[in-house]
Length: 359
Ligand code: KG4
Ligand code: ZN
Image (cartoon, rainbow, N blue to C red; front, side, top):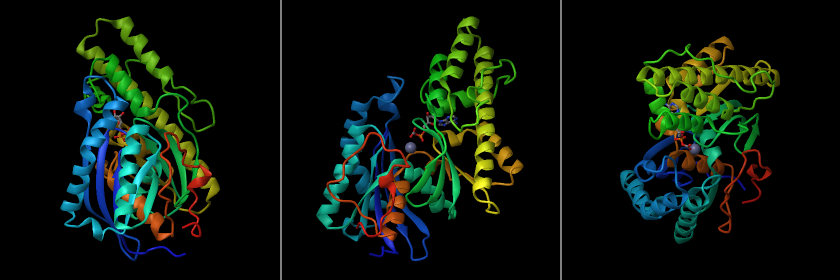
């Protein structure tokens, strides 16, 4: 079965603390156009707890999702009946929230008798650069968010190879934890970056775990512990101490990312000799300017192209889910209404393969 070349997709994202819906159109030539992209962040609901509380997140998704979908249709000046397919995150993520989005998508797809596409959230991140920049396969993706830190080789839709991940904390999580122990509030990434601007990045020398090893994995919990021990040793901390610790932590992280990205680009070049090297960044940590500068540097050294989609599309959103749905639909894919929500779902899982005959 061939896929639908031109399609209008409703995308739904509820796997963490953003309730999001978007309308994306994919034209005959494969270009994407975002007609609407509505994101409601639950930051305020979770702020008092210093992190995302799964039960509160699921409740807020239940309360808001219908409104957010209605707003996405409204902003796109569209009726649900004009949508060609409905895509929703089916995992990985907080299972209560994923269930809210996927169940809603199933009900809507059944009500208008249109295909359902159960999307892997990480695939949404992985394919965003094709929506925003029309990037061709293959490319390398660095996903650095609150829940993930990994390099992924993106060969095609549904064809991913994970080249390493974190063996403990995700990078965004490390920023959040360091912010918490420095009493900088939640989410920690932007707060650490802001205060680090006033700090001396050379004052403290923190460990760079795993860096001597060739594998492309990350580990940030030892670094976080080193930061905590340093903060305890200096307590009570002056404003300058806090700024210096934040700056030193951020520089250490940037150095780790830079080294690892260099290794990943070398591996890419070995695998695809003569092929243009492209590194796509995704996830909330992509907003960090110090890390972005490190990535620019390493890409320049390796003559690689660095692609950073607009930050609103690097963080969780419905457009990336709609787009992944559009790419799959164009290849003839479709999900059964019985498809299950999954708390864990690695990108290189065999069931990510797009089988055009399966639809
Ligand atoms: O992708 P994202 O919005 O949500 C998911 O985790 O899925 O990423 C959020 C993470 C948080 O941990 C936040 O602290 C981090 O991204 N972050 C940053 C910055 N902005 C957001 N980390 C470092 N520097 C930033 N400027
Ligand atoms: Zn995400």
